[in-house]
Length: 244
Image (cartoon, rainbow, N blue to C red):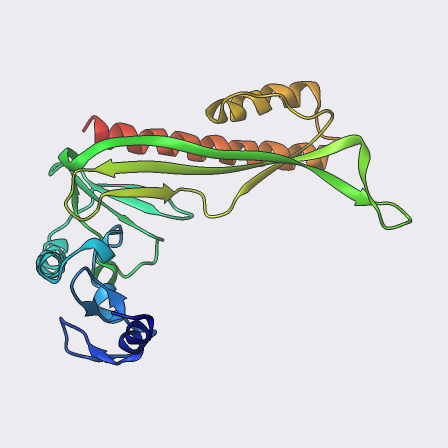
């Protein structure tokens, strides 16, 4: 097929192989041997990432599974819940299974989260994303210059990384804190090695270079408490599922 033929083929309207709806250029979601509409794509597993390499028959099987999953959610009884600001883990401890929803007020029936068995999990671990940057001010000429002593902001985000042997929900990085946590400090740049050590390193650093005012000290301590809260939450989620 030549370039012109490929462009013509891409511009032509086609029908979704599942619902039959006519779809134009922007609405086409490609499969290995067909196309589907965005509405049908929304019915797939929220963690599914291999649509383009899937056949019509494989997607048809997944859609049937997804409808069965929706029905099974009616009998899903959560006995424990983890999370509040971002993604929420709801665990059915007696039946050793769980779901993950993107936020507290999610319509579970509409979102249709995959019901995952503890036995589906091949790896689950806490992951912390950390980076620090120097905060600067503008001098009378409009140039950015360092404060004296320097000011730094340390940014933390907490995740639970999940890998599974589930046929459709293969991998996910669940975000635990709804907003990035910021801890402001004075003094030299903090020296640190591993990301998961950064929080404890920063706690010790603040003992040597405390914030300038009582208010700044209070804010830094509050943010540190929130950091430890989400770190402990991630550990608790991993223990509950991996050891359940």
